[in-house]
Amino acid sequence: MEWSDGKERCRWANPKNEKYIHYHDEEWGIPVHDDHRLFEMLVLESFQAGLTWECVLNKREDFRRAFDEFDLETVCAYDEADMERLLGNPKIIRNRRKIQAAVTNAQVFRKIQEEYGSFSEYIWKWTNGEVVYENDRTYSELSDAVSKDLKKRGMKFVGTTIIYAYLQAIGVIYSHEEGCFLEYCRHSKC
Image (cartoon, rainbow, N blue to C red; front, side):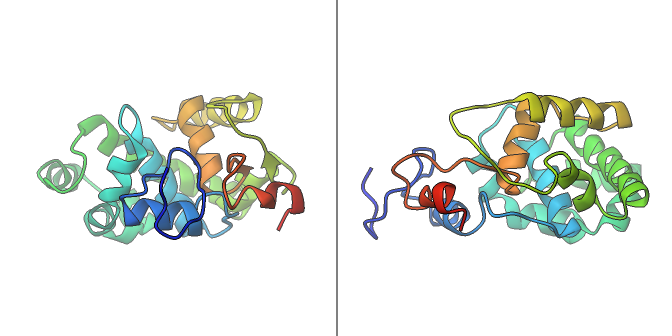
């Protein structure tokens, strides 16, 4: 691919989409411990089911506005009127089951926070706080286990493939491809 800045990137990054380039370079694979950001990414990844990440990423700011900046307590309290408001918003992905899942998942997310002190403690416990370095996968034993546990707790749209993508997005799994200018971090653990 031709990159305007001459840097090689992962094959999935679209060189014509500045949002995608920024996401690839500045966010994807960087460890996240902030519960607010962990919640936002969980909601966004669940909306990706059956779609491309680029589609969701292009609507990210609209999702933020529609979901009250992903304020956990606000989303936990959404009622039928809020869901209808979201279903009527043409700037986001309007899927009733995904919108309902976002509310349910917010409530489960909060319960996990109460149990572990933070969602970050919960999600990073799966690797003892360590980053897993692997690529060219769409699921793993780790994503299988996390997915199974989240489903048992009542979350929806958290299958192993979605959870694998989520773990990559929040830096639990570091997957920059060979040849990507960020792939060196795999070896130097920068």
